[in-house]
Image (cartoon, rainbow, N blue to C red; front, side, top):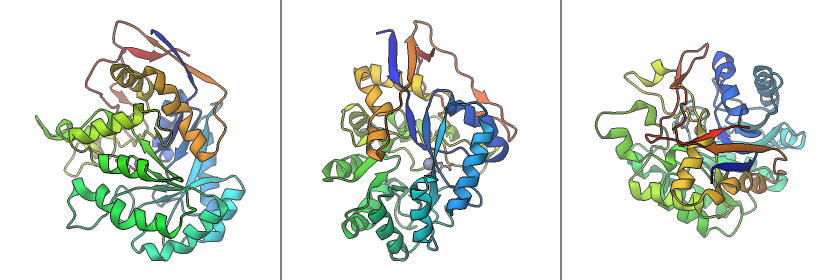
Length: 345
Ligand code: DOR
Ligand code: ZN
């Protein structure tokens, strides 16, 4: 197959940042995607409906004339007002709420330490049908970073889901076979996003032959067996697994330094790279549902009416190595293999 006509895709997990970085990188997503779930971990975080509405305006201003809908989220804190969440959701300002365990990742200091304190919010969300997006890692210092997702499932996520059976939960950027198995074992109300980069890199990609800061993200990539489990889930046709790129730009000075920020920036080449990955896996016919159907269905949104057309050429596609922004250059994810697909319409 040399031409692929897809439903215009959605990105169910995206970091757009703010200010000059937002202006510089937002077009990279809006070019190919119709909608994206926008992460709220700004500094300071987006915690109220009013802040989400203002952030949505700034995103729209950064994308004049673009046919792109940002789906806003609220950053859950121990002080979140359940009534504000429900009102913002009813008003169509907010699509979901994001749970960051405090200290788990970039700008997560205001996240949740004591999960009992957010029970009233979960109750209100379950009642009103507001989905919860979860960064699934414990932050307990004694727990090895490669085990943090699996421990989170047992000690935090499963208890929350048992206490609030009506809560719809999306396990974001799953990185382990444990998470895939957990999602598959659930009766209903649990989905998972999978990133582009976690389908491609494993922990060797980060650490062997010199450390690669542009492959460092959170949750960190795991062993090869886990990458294979993610790929199998992505190409399986199981509607509980869908695309959320977690494209997370940091300027090069924040990546290539003593304490490298977590995040891979995949917005620029995600769709061609995914086409290559699915083609190599013999599953090109499953790409459309993974990027354009399952996530919308899970969130109860209409599938996008538009299309995205990709073409395969014998000559590998040349993507920019960096996107220049007013906040500095951002390195584009390098999949480490030639990509023959390109977006043509
Ligand atoms: O790698 C990551 N980068 N993981 C996250 O959870 C946050 C994100 C960011 O905001 O940079
Ligand atoms: Zn993220």
